[in-house]
Length: 559
Ligand code: ADP
Ligand code: MG
Image (cartoon, helix red, strand yellow):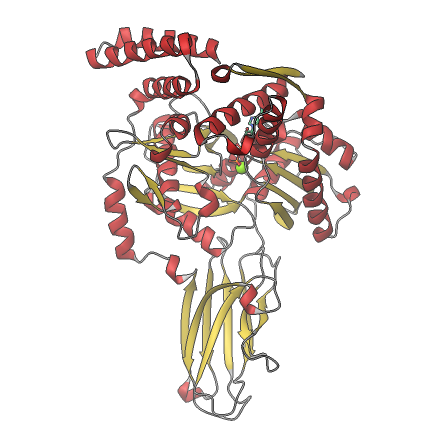
């Protein structure tokens, strides 16, 4: 049975499978490889995922959500059409859709997947990703870091197995730059740096702001709907500038237009370029590598398609970055290859795949100077290769102490309180003089970045006791019963049937355009929408297809 590879992105998600040693991207019902990571609940209570949901973000904001990956592993609640969902649950709908698309494509059931996550994802976020898989009925075979997947893909394409890669992943709302080593069949992330508030969306916004300035309007005081319309037009303009050097934004409903070109865009993005440059410098500095030691610069993420970006990188890094595939598909293809390796297909050489632990993991120790501020004692250091297991010894800090609380933390800060607390283990100990307790603390960090901590009191052989814990923040972790209960609830939500998706997509697009236009054009849209509804009500497929074709033609013209 096939294992699928999934790139569960903030903006777009993809699913890929390995066939005859090659990564094959699986198209969705609309024939596209990219499925927007958006979810919407429609009037009948059905869940739509992808392009339809993305359209509905504008026309039905109260019933739709996107960018929920940002909140993975937190307690944030999204309310869609009056129903509450966690980020994991919304992600599970996206996964369910991708799984269905894959099953249809492969003609068999799919139950296992490899999913990519950002290298900086902490335990909570990784755990939440696995939970999203469970909620979608998928066993997550393993998680891989996005830059590792990109480097794997780059090495396959270039045919160079050995090398140091700088992976520049510029997505919709995030920038991740990683230095990755690939030597002796081992892929290792040497350093990661990023800005999780910097992405293609920011370019949309600078275009939108400049449009407003051009027309003496105040961007910040636009209402929600107008802002969304303008941002959409700006994104369209930005994408057009990938294929051509100049274009024009036309805001139909407001009867306003503005020319735009790549030179202007480069000027508007000056601030953003400075931030990009900082992220690259940090990654290189942390990796202790010079630019000369980097063998290949790999462009990843939809925003890397922008000519202003590749040109900027070329001048900054004094080298032409390589484009190994369409940048927004690289990670997914790499994950597909990983999935193939997991399946142990004959046609793939057996690679040893490793990842590193991006954070230091440790416990609290007493700070005698300020007892309210325990300090961090590292057990597993940042950048250790996974899987890894480390043991450290500790003792009681005070005479006749009866209890020791071992707090488990993740992070680089000196004081524990500034790091992320993952959990704690309480040990009752025999009261002895300070320093006489012998406490063995063992950390085991597995290949998926999930941590198991074992604390053993070894003070006296006869009283030896061990406590063990698998860690992610306890309050974020669902118990088996809760998980079952949520699964029951989620099962009651049906994904929109595949056959209706095209009609739904055209309707959603039409509704969005209706909201965005006025006058005669608006009437024309209303008429087309009416015809589609009629055809659906009549159950006349031939007529429906004809209507849809006509509607698409009209909408294309209007856009
Ligand atoms: P993520 O990894 O964050 O889910 P992607 O890598 O798919 O997202 O990138 C999405 C971003 O890429 C969006 O901001 C989108 O506008 C931008 N993008 C996609 N195609 C193009 C293009 N042809 N030109 C410019 N930007 C593009
Ligand atoms: Mg991505």
